[in-house]
Length: 600
Image (tube, rainbow, N blue to C red; front, side, top):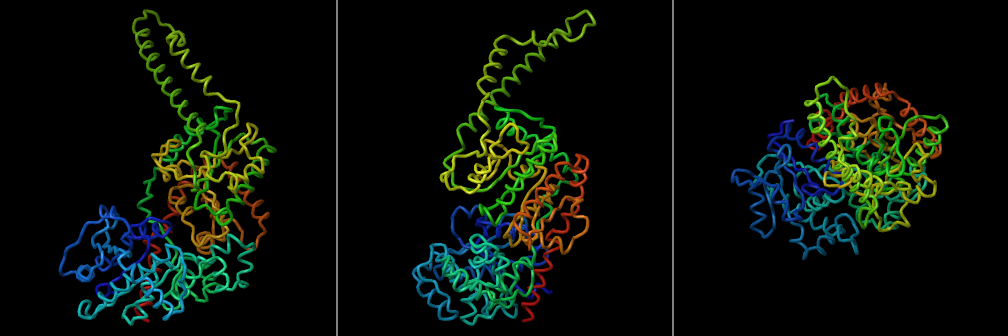
């Protein structure tokens, strides 16, 4: 492909606006796309917050056609920003304020209805904002694609998700000449149905997309997806699973499957995965001591850290299956007298009032104990040195206890006494705003998974993101993952699934599901020796929930029995295996989509 003859515009609501998974796709793909397209590539997103100016290095180049188009829009009264986005790859980016066309909103909705029969009455605020964004994108395309400006060059406008495809649809309806690509990363109707209907995949053909989209109040979004796929020159989605979903729910078959990748350079540990694992596991040990050792202790050298994370979708993310499997794992470990403890972290986002005061207090007292130990160590070190230097005899060590001042002995004892508790460790770290109706918390309480001293599997439900500013962990999420032993993601509905792929890139063994796009892709393209390298794909497709739970419990039990040496081997192999998912390898599928668009 001769990119010098073509301008590639990639449009998303999440350009410079981190809201969800599309942001990750775009950010991670940038270096690979830039290597292929160079300055002929530009991102377009909404200008929603003036603070984003700090991330943009303004471009003022009168010979640049994108600059010329942006300046023409600016002269027409639009609020537009053009420059280099100061992230890896430094791509060109255009941000346009959708609020400037608020007075045209009724006309925008009328145009979409007249051209495509898209209904958009009485919609939520976000939908209105995306429709206004569609209008400003259409205006930009109408200026850029004029022969007097672009000459004989082609323009590809590649939109992600229903939030960005409206601009292409409006521009097509107006007769603007360009090539269009539309990628849906999931169908919004599929997500709603999977959350609310049992046996979603088995019943996929039963659903009437028009009727169901009205039932869930997502008619506009679903129609944008439907017509976006139908009227694009090339329609793509991220997995074969979602492709089948598009055929049934959107009545449009994707032309190309464009699997998601990662930027391996971001995760590269340069063969130091073991060092990093040990370093961050030690940080998690600090949390574990503070959270559990108030009531009872266990051997940290025989402790495994499992975790899951993601959007709060109790069923879709497989939280229900995971918790049931862990309950069974606990019984299996007790019955087989396994001398290991599993601490399981469930990381998601849920409205909270604050971190639980008891959890914070325990952490605070633990820090005081740590301070006391440091002071005692300093005093022993100094006195021991002078005692040894002044001794004329070849004697053994003096009584170390005698070197500690009474004040520090008393303070140490009192602090420890104040810290000890008869209360079992809490299963949730925060005070939830809706404690009574929380599905995860109710599951743990109902099944008596309450961190009893007799349990081999312990639970920590953390309804907030982990970051270095978090007072409980003090490390970023990426580092937390590196410190864990296993990531568990048996999703029921997952069009792709970045979390298991990112585990692999960090050298952390993982469990995924054949009902996730990533899991399905792995078993179809890399089916040999997966378990040996630490990639486990749970069979959920066509399997009963109970069977899937039993299979997961057995898988986890086998991992618990795996030797430390075998786990180290997995980390080494995973580091190499991750190369298969680098954007350098997977960007070719997007290139295929662009070639098809140009040939259409």
